[in-house]
Length: 181
Image (cartoon, rainbow, N blue to C red):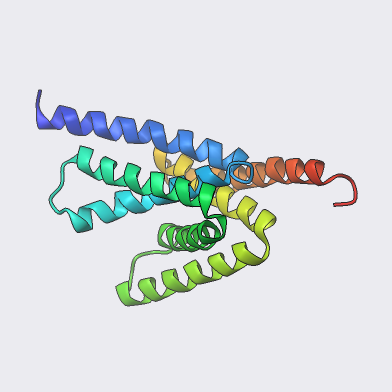
């Protein structure tokens, strides 16, 4: 089989996996904190692998992503306080890189680091609602990226997905806390 066939298969697999992970985060990110951190670890691994192993075959990039994802899940399960900081930081960096144009590399790195620190602190201080917001933002990003929508559909879809995710997760949180919470 040709290299082009394998590349197309790998791209199709990614385009199916991203929206699936995004849907889980969008609607269940608060309930599945370990999955939230695992997805962030997986994404960080996918982004780091080409930098660490250049050139690397697609399967190796995925393997690094999976290893980072498992590390993230284990952190969330056994070292929750560390996972809160790591998850907050990675989500802030990921969102800033996703939402900001890549014009000036030095400025983008500085902004991304600041967003990562701000997200980590916010998640540490206001866990429930910040986790709901971050998981819906990351989930909506994964869905839109996986589908491949472009502006203006991507922007409209992103806003609608975030609103739906925050609404569903917020209702579940209020129901869990009861009428006084």
